[in-house]
Image 1 (cartoon, rainbow, N blue to C red):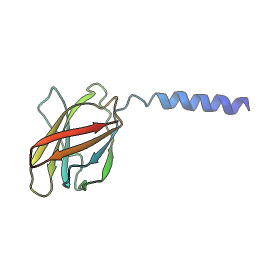
Image 2: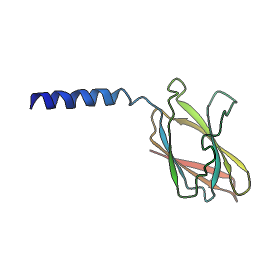
Image 3: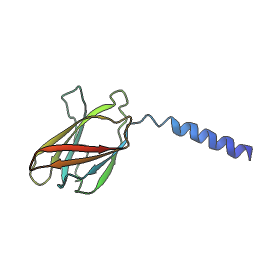
Image 4: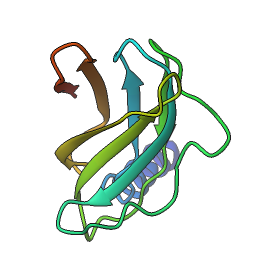
Length: 117
């Protein structure tokens, strides 16, 4: 019995070492399919590569993104919509503290918002 408790304690401690990663779930509640997703540190102007690749993120769908840049926890997100190639940005997400980001967008008013967990 003691060995099982020690093993469980070691697993709990080793799991805690992964708690600093910046992986997150991105949920699309914009009303439109997303063709491209970019993530960049807030203080940089380089968006890097499209993190969706050849996939799309349909409206009301979600996807987990692996993101380990814990030296730059605060990130901006830019998406390109599949239906009209328009781009929208959301700023200032601390990915080291968030598990889920739900993007919202009102194309008529241009309002962007996000719910975070």
